[in-house]
Length: 291
Image 1 (cartoon, rainbow, N blue to C red):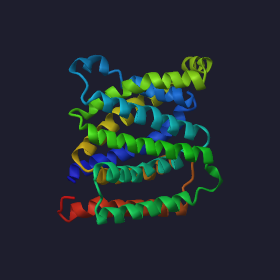
Image 2 (cartoon, helix red, strand yellow):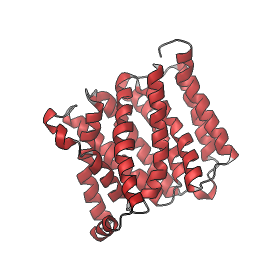
Image 3 (tube, helix red, strand yellow):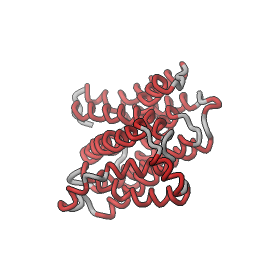
Image 4 (tube, one colour):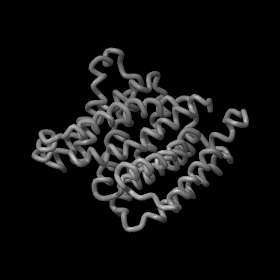
């Protein structure tokens, strides 16, 4: 993996880690399904200028990614945080998508990870288990289950993105965002109620509006666009472990800005995650080998 792409992957992880602070802020103004719908509505706006160029991938993949990532993944993630799972912990649980992705890639694409990658992922998995074992009473069981479901949906979207082989990954994210808006609005109306939707929109604060913009432009278009490029360029089993950095950034930012605590056990787990990434990706790169 080229050094430039390693840097891009780390920056994407940092953006996704910080976005858990933004999600917590946004959920103060919006119910979770409406918040997710607004995120993708803003992210889809460039389609007004790009639609004439046509879809960047077969429509079946755009629809699949839109439903898996835009509707299922973010609905479950936002609801999981809204019902009580701490944002920092959610940033950890969501990254089990790396393992779901590797499993699905092996089963469906024949994209089997090497022994070095498996060893690195095992170290990272051990780190996640150490952190998860230090949850205490702050974790919501329902929220945990919902965010695990979000991780599985994210893995499905990763595989579909790999198979789509879009010529324009950023365009793919814009089209995918457009697919997600209507189902999310319908779900919000059905489960959150029209009155609550109108009240949230009329009472929106500047912080709430900023949360929507950050989620749309940075976390969706910029970060997922770059992630899509990496998935097209490299095997999914090589790209996916970088997402294990997200809980490191997520738990750090939520501790600093939201007051969520990071215990010594969580720090030890984060160190294992970093070591696993070094074994999986950085080690071969420093050795001058192409994974």
